[in-house]
Image: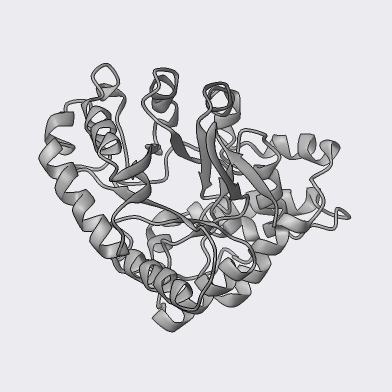
Length: 329
């Protein structure tokens, strides 16, 4: 496993992290014993960065992570595992509208109460990184929630502060980085969604902000394992994400990626991760890992050679400006 600086902060993170949404739920049936085994395997392979959220199974993902960390400590493991979690806005529309008020969706009372819950679920007295789970450009001129988080940071309850970009307006966080409000940003960046390379990633590097990349597989289609006939359970997030003709269109675009990979030695999944890791601003990429086999496959990508510049350049053509596929996620 290779390690990278986490922005300007005194921490080097595994370039492959553990995305913990699926172990919480919303991605089909998932047994806790499989999740625990996947977590242990990933950590044994060198992963030292785990990303989770309050909304991943209403705390289920956080509780499993806390259990694994306690079990490993009890077994005498001498390791520092960096855990990032997320606080969603208080009840209301998602994503927040231009008319939502930051003091209502992320009030100090709410943030303090939610932080207490996050700490309890993970079984810790301090969070390594707390991220706001979405944002709106409307709050940039008066980012009150981050003022509250900085106070919680001074109190020692939070190590670093971050934000997970709103899918429909990822560039809205650029001003937050330039103004020094965030230590880390979690962004969607993949072979189809290459817009962050236009400005966001460079600004993060200039400002010393850690970059966590999510959705590197575009919810799985970039692994090449889906066909247009693939079916998802009704309670699987992907049933909504790929509704209508979306799956067929995404599979067709993925076929173009696979054609460009001929003779490269990369599988589609390996190429998807290597493409993301080719950008120097990226601190870690967090593919979803829900089994030992997925831990082995994803972590093994770190040991592969860097993607050749010619192939990287060729894959730029798959930038796909398809609009927003989320519907109030």
